[in-house]
Amino acid sequence: MRLLHVMLRVVDLEKMIKFYTGAMNMRLLRKVDFPQGRFTLAFIGYGSEKKQTVIELTCNWDTDSYIKGDAFGHIAIQCDDLQATCERVRSSEGELISEPHKMKGGPVMAFAHDPEGYQIELLGPDVFDLLEQGFD
Image (cartoon, rainbow, N blue to C red; front, side):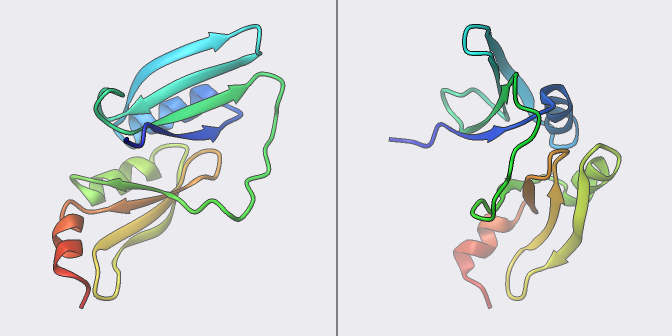
C-alpha cells in the first residue's frame, strides 16, 4: 500500500495551480473536467503519480466557498532552498505567515498559506537528518 494523494477543495482552480506550480515548484501532472458531475480535478506534484504522493485540487463548478474547519492541519513540503521558497511565496498570491525559524531542538521551518488559506509547513533540506538524530 502507499499514499496516493491529498485532496483539497478549491474555488479558484487556476489561481491555485499557478501558486503551487510557481511558488512551490510543482508541476501540473494532469487536469480533467467532468461535465456531467460539474467538477474539475487537477493533480500537481514533484513527480509521477505512479511513484510519488501528489495533491489533488478539486474544483466543484457550482461552489463558491468552503468552510475549512479546524481539523485539517497543514501540508508539509521539504524545500531545497527554504529562503528562496519563502521569497516565491511572498511574490505570489500566497502569504508567508511565519519567517524561517529553528524549532526548539528541531529543524528550520516556516509556514505559509496558499491563496485559499490552506496552511503549508516549509522545511529545509536537512529535515530528515535532524529527525533521524532526534530532537535535542
